[in-house]
Length: 242
Ligand SMILES: [Mn+2]
Image (cartoon, rainbow, N blue to C red; front, side, top):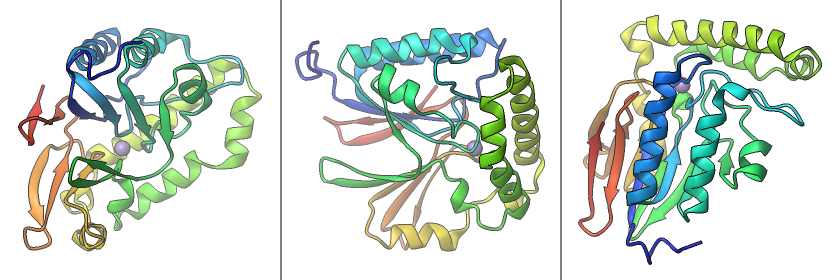
């Protein structure tokens, strides 16, 4: 395994919300192309959740339809790129398969990292939308232990069908809720920023954003659905790209 330094890859990439669904091979291909691009240019990749619209792991099996993406992630890791996966509200079941088989670091919640002198707070972002009570009910349902136990003990095709239905309801809810509920709570954002972060990166809202909060002290990025954020280490700048 060659080290990132040897291959002169220093940039850090952030992406989220591709919401891959079984049968959508074009979208899968698009994500794989991005992963190959990161393999050439990146030192680290942070996936900020909802990469999969629905995910379930069995002890000995995964959803076969996503095998090409998993293979691309495996290659990325083998080439020496650091890969982190933060749970979204759709793919919160991502676990052992990623950690053990792919050697990807899985984070169930927000994480703090440093890039050089910059301190960052990374999150899928659903917990920053405090006013969204209907969403929280769906979330509670999706993470329910009895339901998850049941999923592990019924045929895979049934589980997939039920999972897609719940994921669909959750997605429709996010898509159709009014602008006010879509918005991140400024109070929640500032509460995080006040802990001293230079940069906060979130996703979930499916609407790319880049603005300053806390009187210009903290930069707040929101990842779009098919746009990624890139940190160019040598130049110390941030850019969105597709
Ligand atoms: Mn989400």
